[in-house]
Length: 111
Length: 161
Image 1 (cartoon, rainbow over the protein chains, first blue to last red):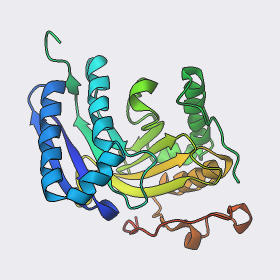
Image 2 (image 1 turned 60 degrees about the vertical axis):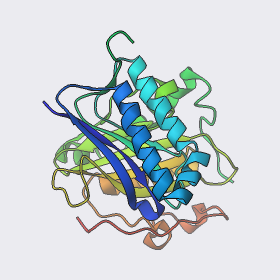
Image 3 (image 1 turned 180 degrees about the vertical axis):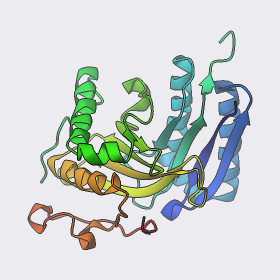
C-alpha cells in the first residue's frame, strides 16, 4: 500500500509555488521527511525569495519541522494536514504538510 | 469587541480538551439528519497531542459521499476584535482531481462571533451547498452582529455544488 503525501508552499491567493511529494512503499521516515522538506525550502528560497522570507518570518518552515519531529515522537502519524502560519494570512501564503495516505514521519529504527 | 472563548487554550491541556469539546458540541448542533444523510464523520484526522498540533486542526470532519471536509485551525487571540478567515482548499489532490476532498478551512480565534460564523459556514457546507467566502455580500452575518472592524478578503468561490 502506498504511503503518500506532500509538502506544499503556497504564495498569494493560494497559488502553489512548489511542492515536494512522496510516494513510498513503506512509511516515510522523519529523517527522509526533513530531507525532502529542506530540498523544497532551498528551491523556494532560490526561486521565490520574497515569499520565502515572509514565510520564514511567520515561522512556517520552523513549525513544519517541529510538526515532523512531534509526529515522529508519537511513532509517526496517519492522514493529516498541518498548515502554518496560524492564524492564516489573508494573502493565503502558507506551508501545508499533507499526509494523504497511510503513514509518515516514523522514527528511523534506532532513533 | 467580541467575547473570546478559551483564549488560553494552548497554555493548559485541560482547557485544550474543553476547546475540542466546544467544537464537537457546535458540530452536534448541525442538523443530525444532514450529517447522517451526507455520511459525515468526525474527527477526519486523528488528533495529535496538543503540543504537536497546537489547534492545527482543533476540529476536522469529512464526508466521503460529498468529497468534502472541514478543518478548523484555532489560534490564541491577538486583538480584541474578530479574527476569522475562511478559504477553500483540497486534500489528496488538486481541485481537478475527482478523488480530492474539497475543504472548508476556517482559521480563527474562538469568540462568540467566530462561533456564529463558523456554524453558519459549516451548516451550508455539510449539505453540499456552495459557499461564498465573501461573507459580507453573502449576508450570512446579521449587520447587528458585525463588529466595527469587520472585513473579509474576497477570494475565488468554489464551483457551485
